[in-house]
Length: 74
Image (spheres, rainbow, N blue to C red):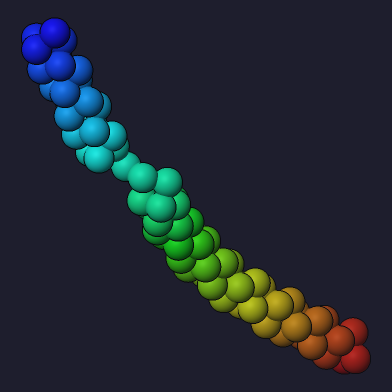
């Protein structure tokens, strides 16, 4: 009986130690949140670059329109 108690106690302690080393739901949520923030920042940077490229294209297009109007006016 004493041996059984020792085995049960050891098993419970081992299970508790194993559970405490596993990441909790809160830890998992925090890690996922950090990943989402990184992804969002990357997308924002890429979006900013795309906006600048788009603005440059619009400016070139507007210049071509004006140049085309002047060519036809001559």
